[in-house]
Length: 136
Image 1 (cartoon, rainbow, N blue to C red):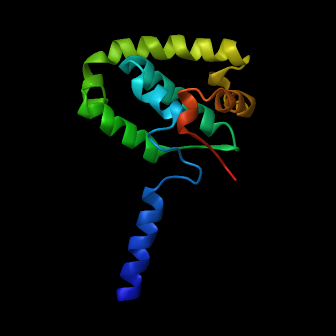
Image 2: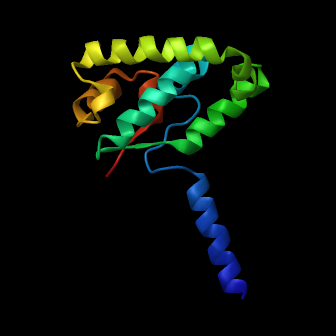
């Protein structure tokens, strides 16, 4: 029983650290993400999630997403502050998606292969790259 408990704790600890290659909070891309205005922050996360879903070479770092959101909540810019900004977030998401599409010559709505766009964001070390983790 003790071995099972230790095994479960170790498994949970491994999950809590995030995907292999996850970034620290001090990483420049993470700082870019952290410092985005609230509407841009949520638009960036939504697009990053879409990219990760449509690219087998990248995972979405949900653990880092939660960590950044917790820190943003501490200063009044996280999920708690987003409730009153729904319309602004929706408008920014629409603008950001169109900008992303134009920048990378893709269409997020079609669900095609977004790996070249993910590679470009990762190489640029953009705010979006903070939550895109290369799959080994």
